[in-house]
Image (cartoon, rainbow, N blue to C red):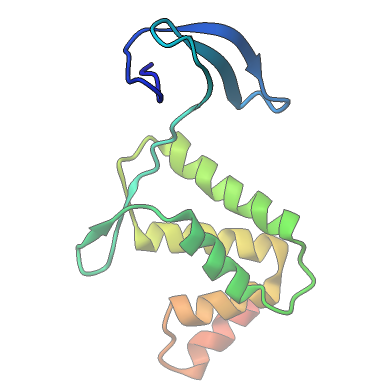
Amino acid sequence: MRCPFCSHDETQVVETRESDEGDVVRRRRRCQKCDKRFTTYERAEIALPSVVKKDGSREDFALAKLRGSMQLALRKRPVSIEQIDAAVDRIQDKLLTSGAREVATARLGELVMRELKRIDKVAYVRFASVYRSFEDVDEFRKLIRDI
């Protein structure tokens, strides 16, 4: 680890601690050249798949977009932030465990709809009506009958 004060390449770890949750390691370091101390934090880097859009373009997975679309569907519904966070975590876990390097927006949309159906049926219908772009009322009726 390079010293942030003098840019020397050799530093010594003086103390190591894990966070209470166990997901971050805090290390106190000392530069062997200038003798100054500093703190570094280590956390696992999670490699989420790229999102392949309908037009074939690709973009990085954006957790904020996923959460925002779910919050929009759940607007003014009796669902806690904790429930939304848990649903987002489940979707993220499915993506990570799949091992896929890319995920189609269609697959991502299906995962969101499954979670919304689980936590709030009205939000599920809201999201599905936009996501599936219903052409007529009969398609909408069928969706509501199915739930």
